[in-house]
Amino acid sequence: GSRSLGRSKGRPESREDVERNPFTLPSDEEMFRLRDQERRQKEATKKEQANRKVWEKMTGSAVTGRASRIADLIDEGAAGRSHDSRRSHKTKALVTAGKSVVGTERRPEKENMAEFIAKKREMFLVQMSLDTKREEIWKLEEKAQMKEEALKKSEQMLEEDAIRFDTFLKENDKKAHEAIKAAERETKLKQDKVQEIKKLNQAIQMVQSEMSKHKEALEDCLKYKDFLDSLTPPEFFEEQRHLKRQRQQQRREERIQRRLDDWQMEKERTRKEWDARIEADFEALVKQGKSKKAARQAVSQAKPPRMPPKPDVDAEPLTSSGQDIDMFFTEPRQLLEIFTQLEEQNLFLIQNSQETEQALEELKQEFHSTQREMNRKSSSLRENIDALQSQIRDEESKSEELSKRIQISSGTTEEHQDQLLSSLHGKVFEVYQKCGFDVSGGSPNTLFMLSELEAKLEDLLSAIEQMPEDYVAKAEKAKEKQRRERKRIEQQLEQERQQEERNRRSNERSMMAPKKRTGRQVMF
Image (tube, rainbow, N blue to C red; front, side, top):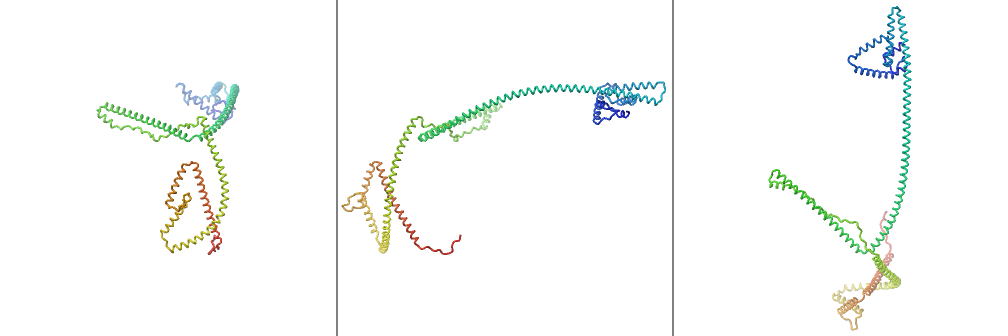
């Protein structure tokens, strides 16, 4: 018991110490807690000491001496394990016990020192057991009080939790009710939006159907417009384009005039500002004491303002108003007239096409007959060509002999000219005779025949001018047709002659002996 008391000596008491066994060592956690408690107690004592009067204050040595004297009086008592209130109570009890002991010692009875010490020890143990029991009772009471307070706090916390839970339930019900209302509102809004979307989709479909109808109508109208434009005379479009260019030119001139007016106004405003500035500078110089002449000279030396540049009106473009050209057709009557004219033209063209087809059919028949005739003639002409070729060869041989003779005997130029004149006279006489002139009186002079032919030709030309144009054109076509036919026959004969010549040469080449190659063959 004395060792436990010695261990606990000098350590302040706390609530945890009261709850535990007073004769056991505290743990490290309790030691730190006790240190904190001692530190707070010292700080409180220090503050209390600072608040005291000067004569009430005590030094540290005085406090230590008082404590040591009290400890000696109570014979190393076990004070210091409780709070300040309990410590003071125990100190008073120990002092009372000490006084009683001291009183007994002063009795005149003589006692043995060992008995005295034993009694004193026994008294101390009894007193200590009483103190221990009191401490245990106090601790139980304090623990019961703490339990009661804890129960009260728990009950209060439960009540608060119940209140909070009720509040939470109310708020939750309120929020759920609001959420249901919000969901109903959102559902209603959604249904309204869905209905609105359906209406909009229906409206869109109606608009699209209307657009498709209008688009089809527009395509039909554009087709009709193209058709009417194809029937419109080109002069109308040219006139409308000319009017449009005039309107564009008029708008361009108006814009140019506005720009020039703005430029003139800007120039006038700049000039007025410059005059006002010059006048203000002149008045300021005069107020400064300068003469009017000097001020006028100083003001005249000022740099004139920069005038705005003249706008470039040549670059002003022609703009279109976006207005379409007016249509030529304004009344159905105009279209009916055009259709009537086109119908007449079509009837005329149909009649011409029928006549052309009939003429084509006649030409085909004539072509077939002509082709058969030409085939027959070509066969006879081939025979004639063979005969003529033989004659040509004979004549060529004769011409060679004649050329040799001519080379031998030199002929004169006059004889050659006489020959040419005689041949020309013969040809003119032949034409003169074919034209129906009388040649029974012998062969007239060449110049006379040419003059007669020229007069005849002039008479024929004057007669042709008096004839109908259709008849003349038809006759010209017939003559031109005959000329082309004659020319075609001549070309065909020439082609046949050339083809026969090529065939003859190819036959001659085929009859020739093959040419033998000499030397080495070409290596590939």
